[in-house]
Length: 247
Image (cartoon, one colour):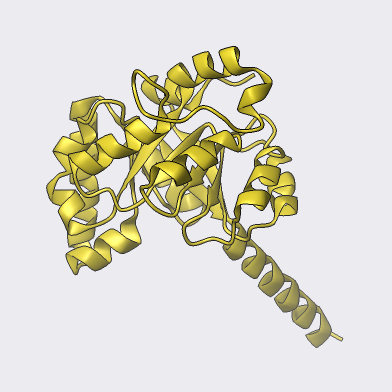
């Protein structure tokens, strides 16, 4: 069994993830066959519902499973963890108070306020609670200009395991999708390093993921289901048309 995400990040290891939006457990099962470090189920902008999320998380194999919840709300964070996720990615964290709220929702007392329950956790309550105290990954998303201004305090919030950058929304909020965004990304990574907290970000494809991992980011995205399917369909069509033109 692989070491927990939290321990791998603390050891300075980069982890590669697949990002799944389509809300289809079959896609999760196919993705898990290639044994990625991380499978992220996007319940914010993706099509996941409570039932399909529970089903899908049972198919992730030995890949670590994270859920991006729809909002920074205790019931959504608790449901994702109860379903079997090893951690959560919490969007739109703009202040250290927001970060502390996410940490509290993800951990059982005395560290937090998570309620006990759920079908999977109740199968082995004692062992599950003990494991969660050490291994639950709390990743807070920094994706606004306000969040950027508070990046140092957010990274220093006790219990935050990763600051995960959403570059698209951050660039929109900063009004700069070019050099200004890149400078902000670099600055956030530096602040996380100073706080001893892992930093990750959404990346589009393996080349970008490799480049960011070399820069020190601990969670990068090598592909997402929508893009991979779209590209696969387009490639198949082009290959067919190319072969046909040779006849």
